[in-house]
Length: 165
Length: 173
Ligand SMILES: [Zn+2]
Image (cartoon, rainbow over all chains, first blue to last red; front, side, top):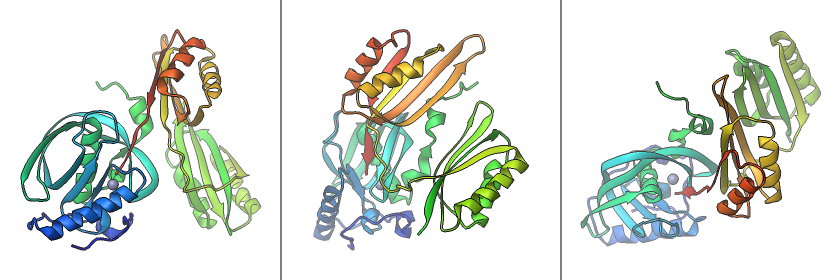
């Protein structure tokens, strides 16, 4: 698997592709995951990374929300992740390693149930909420060529919502 | 080497203001930087960073012609073009309640005393004509924690209002 040593940044077109599912859960995959995690940990306090951010167009994500308060699963490798169900919506501030020096408010589901495989091909299922769920949704967007920029909402419309009739 | 200007504009809101102003800037060969454009109480307002290699005086002349033609007030002032260094807010403050004089003065004096650097302030008058509701939202950087700031705001004369202060967590991934 090909990986760059540095995170690629928008407008690199590879960030806009739909990534392919992983089919071989082998040593090459695990070596790639280790490389990708190295890139994530070398960045400025990143809590997740997706394979396309290092130029690899496969459905692989690493998240680690353990540095933040609130319940989380620690370091997770999510391969071919799928959202099985979700509930609620919350606004939060996001930035992206691939879009430096920019943050924006994004609405995400509050609670998620996801299914995926780990790096050994074992099926896994996780329930998660709030910050950790936000990280996973941000990363899963990367697998479908979406950036948080596509979802940013105006601060003002969120701050001062009109009553819906 | 381009120099940067801050263009400020106010005028009665109507469709097309942004298109007309930016067309003039485009024809003058300007670059646009960061901007805030907003309708405030029936007015349309623009704060826009404009970069140009050319002559600020000539640019200002074309803008004033446009301002006269469209009944807008436009200013162009030299400004620093400091990009790619956004400070990240770590605290947000929301204050709301029955509108009265002095809310912003009291709140921001208290925040300044806390060493709070305001990065963004937005406020609106909601509610109804009979019962106006003032809502103030401030984001910025502060060395104190949210709870300490909230206590200081309440003690400093904002007891009649709803004050909430929260840490802002930016997720980078
Ligand atoms: Zn990202």
